[in-house]
Image (cartoon, rainbow, N blue to C red; front, side, top):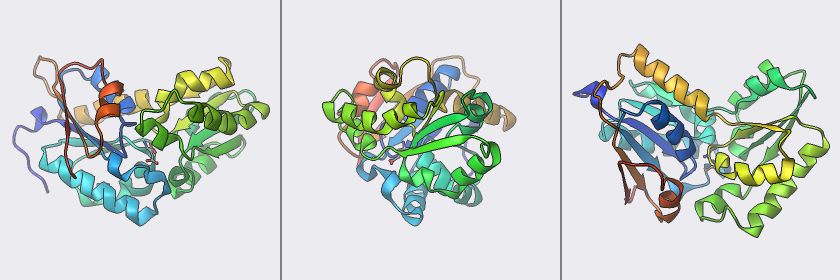
Length: 267
Ligand code: DGL
């Protein structure tokens, strides 16, 4: 049991295998502007998607311990791979609430007209039990076209969103989906929202792209409110971001966010 003083005023913790989870973090801080946050970019261990379940669990435990030591009152696991492989263990081990992210298969399955939905995610997410369960439960009558986004996370981590290599990989992964007439594309990795402009160039504007940021922000607010943990101080939140790798990419991606400190730490 982790008892913290001034619980309401403690920060919301986030972690991801690197910079991608900032796409989720941005949605949360937009929705909850008075909350302080602490974000752990575990870029040194990216990508998680190629690791086995036990390795992912061990990393998630380590990240959680750091966030709890830094006073996190709730933790947003801003990574699909970490959520689908480790969130049950985290919830059973620690006494603070956890918010996870999962590929938004359900809304896509409910809305598709062509009955064909694409999903771009990491190997770790697509092979997880939780993903299979969700797909089976909500999309058994839909043609789900799964594609591993191998190589995309390292390119994003290395500030190479606009590279030729990125364009080549995205075309290779997405063209077969458009040939199979998807009308929804689910982004099952928190790094991928940063690719939306590039993805649109390939699949066009008619395919609806769904990511999980908005839903996670809404859920975070709901859970904080249920636990009576919303920060009611009336001043803008402060944001502390740590990376255990080069911080240049992180800096670039959050350039517009105010009240932030970014530091490199070994963890
Ligand atoms: N942002 C992580 C996710 O949502 C990236 C996974 C990885 O590191 O492979 O799955």
